Amino acid sequence: MTERIDLAKTLQMLGQAEDILLICHKNPDGDTLGSAGALQHALQAQGKRVAIFCSDKIAEKYGYMQLALYDGSWEPGYVVAVDVAGIQLFGEAASGYLKRVDLCIDHHPSNAGYAEATMLEEDSAATAEIIYQLIGMMGIEMTKVMADCLYTGISTDTGCFKFTNTTPRTHRIAAELMEQGADFVRLNEVLFESKSQQRLAIERIALSHLEYHFDNRCALMYVTREEIERTGVENSDLEGITSIPRMIEGVVVGITMRQLESGSYKVSVRTSGNIDACKICAALGGGGHIRAAGCEFFGNLENAKAAVLAEVKKQI
Image (cartoon, rainbow, N blue to C red; front, side, top):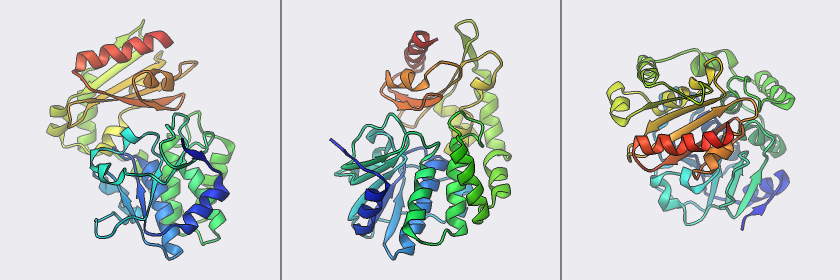
């Protein structure tokens, strides 16, 4: 059973920790990377040895975060999961570090409570909001790279401040990060206004598989592993296509399915109105938020589609 702790206790535990390993979730997005990156730089400013581990490759576009990736040359003394709701999200490559997770810092209501201690703030739009508060309590200078990391986490998890998880505090923190040096113009271009040729290719393929269900209120699209490999698209670009089905007029549940290297399917659900995406995915072993959630289905495509659509039917 995890111990639920507040910001003050989190700060105390991090202050006492040495040789800290920060673990991001697989298929890393801007929030897990930006939150871990900002925390890495803050703890390093306190003279601590810190590194970041992620099971999957990190896209080159996040190079500005200056992440110190773990190289295995030292033994972690304290393990912190950042923006990871459940152990299944660590990925197979992280199994060597899962003897224990000392601390989890997260904002997902579906957090499984797997860590020894959990700092969970469900009303934060992104884990980056929590890290912003922690850094403020540390009494160290907010550098430009920290501000860039945190702005990335907040902007990506709110869909550039469009999603319903965006709060007045979210905007206030973003404004403060801008004042503290976040290059929001360049970041918004990189994160939201620039698409690679590979990204456009996978969008075209995904749209060719578009299906409608439940009187066109649900839209589903998918891409297979062969199609992903053929285009050469990066994981970060695959994350970017998840919002497409929900953008269609009249659709209240958008589903994107992409096949992983293992053969399983990563399912991303986006909803509007009174449809709870988290309930849909929780029934399949996943979780997330009311408007955005995900799960992983081990089986063939048709079985995966049938399973998620059965849960959608219950909600819709």
